[in-house]
Every structure is written in C-alpha cells, then in structure tokens.
Length: 431
Ligand SMILES: [Ca+2]
Ligand SMILES: [Ca+2]
Image (cartoon, rainbow, N blue to C red; front, side, top):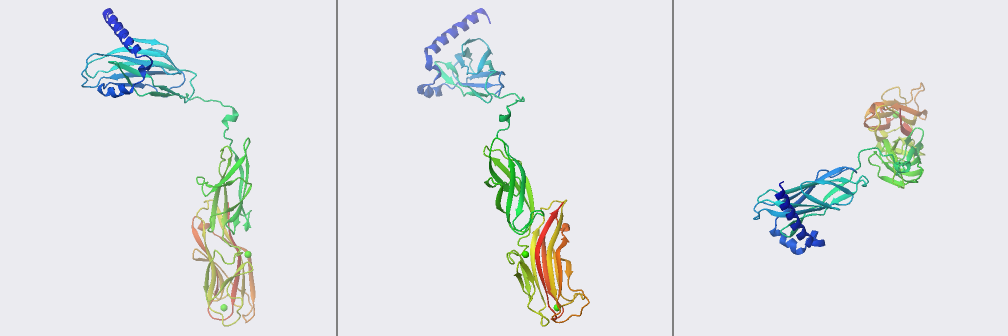
C-alpha cells in the first residue's frame, strides 16, 4: 500500500471512528427506528468459525463478511466492522488493517459497487482453562454503513475436551453405584424347587443382591432382557405370578439402586404344568368324556367309572389333556415328562382289543398299559397296576408346542370294567 493510500485509509478510519464513537454505548444496539429503516439498507453481515467445537487452548479463526447485494445503488461505501471478543478467548491476529484495543477489533473497509463483499478474518485462542461443554457465544459484531448499524447472527463455540483418558476419583467413576444381583430363583409353591417345575403360575421369587454406598430400591422382571418392565419395591422374596399356560418359561430380573444404578440381568427358568397335581380338581385340563366320566378324587384325576363292575360297562374313553409349550427350551437340554398312574381293572390287556390306559404325545401313542397276568378274568376280580414317577422322553419335541393326552379306554365288549387314577403330571428340563 502506498503512503498516500495509507494516509487516505487512516483518515477514513479516523472519520468513521468519530462517527461510530458518536453513536456511543448504544451503537451496537439497533433501535426500532433503525430496524425499520434497515429494509432500505439491504446489507448483510455474517460470521463463521472454522472450528465450532474447539478444545481448550485451540485456535479458532472467524470470517466476517459484509455483503453488498446486487442492485444496491451505492458505490465505494465506507464500512466500519467491529468485533467485540467474547470471554474465554484471547485475540491472536486479524487480517488487513485493523485496530485492537482491549476486547474490540475493528476494520475500516470499503464496499465496492456490485457484489464484492467486504471480508475480514481474525483468530483467537480458546482459553486453556475453558470449561468443557461451555458455550462461548460470539455475538457482538456489527457493521456501520451510512450511519446505520447492522448486526449478524451469533456464532457459538462449544468447548469440547480432547479425547484423553481422565482418571476420576473412584467415587465419581462408580456413580451411580451399580448393584450386583448374585442370585435369582423361582420357587414353586406347588412343585419342586430343585427340579424347577411348578404346578401353579403363582410362585415366589427369591433375590440376593449387593450394593455398596447405596440401597437397593427396586426389582424388575420380564420375559426378555429388554422388557424388564414389571417392577416392585426390592425385597429378598416376592410373590409373583408367571404368565399362564403350561410350558418352559424364562424370567429375567434386574435390581436397581436408589441412585439409579442397575444390575446386569439374571435369568431363572421353570417348567409350568398347570394343575398337574390336580389340587384344583380338573382346572386347566381339557377333559374328554366319551361314555365314561372323568373327575377329581382326593387330589388325583379319576378316568373312568369306579362304581361299575362286570356288566354292562359302556365302551368309551375318559381322558385329560393339556398343551405344553416347549419352544423356549434351549437346544442342549433334555425334556422328561413324569406322572404317576394306577390302573384298576377286571379286564385283561393281553388282547390288544381289551381295556387300556394310553398316553399320546402330539397325537402319537407313546405308552399303553393294562393287566397282563395269568389269572382268569372274572366279575369282581380286581387287579391294581401302579406306576410311580413314570417317565417319558419328550426331548424330540423340544422347540414345539405339544399336546399331552392321558386316557382310560374300555373296549371290545361291555364286559369287565377298567378305570385309572393319574397324578403329579410334570415336566423336568435338564442339561
Ligand atoms: Ca395330587
Ligand atoms: Ca372291559
């Protein structure tokens, strides 16, 4: 720049500064009158930063642009651009000829005719002590054109920490305190805890958990680890009702502390065979009574008519059945169906057409039994056949929902009665 130009520039700065100074403290605050007037001064001031999420200590460069929109009928318009630096930054340098005093930087520029904007840049350093995630709002910047002050939208910097490991004190690192669920079990009220089967959906849940520096607040349950929405105040034992329907069930549990810490989920499983002990008469069983009755007798199912003897005995069938859902049984598990039965008969089983007790799984006959002794059949000659903890392998039905059918059948002719007691029908899943 030639000396003459520098002098001209200096005079320009001086002149504009005087005018600008005369506007004094209110110069950066647009009056209502000015705002209304601005429509006739379609100049635009904008600012951008090269980094909007700087780390503490990082350099940030801003660009301020004052545009002279096409069609503006003014030529070589003097413009004074001012920047008031926000807190938490330190001025480094700026473009062109500028003045820097305290926290203000200003430039005297000339907007040329046409579309060339006036562009100035300046750089700051974010204070090394700036707090992470603290916003630095770079708001106060303006341009003075023809005695009119125009403002632009603020630019906000969000101070972001560098990606370094920060070693927090133990108490902060572990907040909120995480509880540890050390034991979770489903205890049947009717059934067997060790073999994990139940005859009733009503069970007791037992929980053991630890937490240090907080107290246990809540226990939540659900069918999956993502659906633990069934929540109760924490207790070591809780009455709980499993989803109804016979089958293999999985229950997830989590415990929570008062501060909001949540344990890893724990899993407990159980096999429900509803009313397999017939304590609720024949509830939950599908009952077949084809010419023969089915009933509950002293906690057992009685299939057939115990009051009849000899002749005439109706030819028919009395049965109980239930569908058991084994779809959730894991692939490496074995499934066994157990039950007790007692056949009381005057008939013989040697002929396949005679009376029998039968077990069908998914419609296939898996077991049949009856009297096979040598004694002659006779009216009032009763024989009793007892099986306790009779077992049937259901592993081939893993992954399926299958029907269990237990039936007492009288056959061939109307001579000699047969009836069967059934009890303790349950399913055990083992590794
Ligand atoms: Ca029973
Ligand atoms: Ca018979």
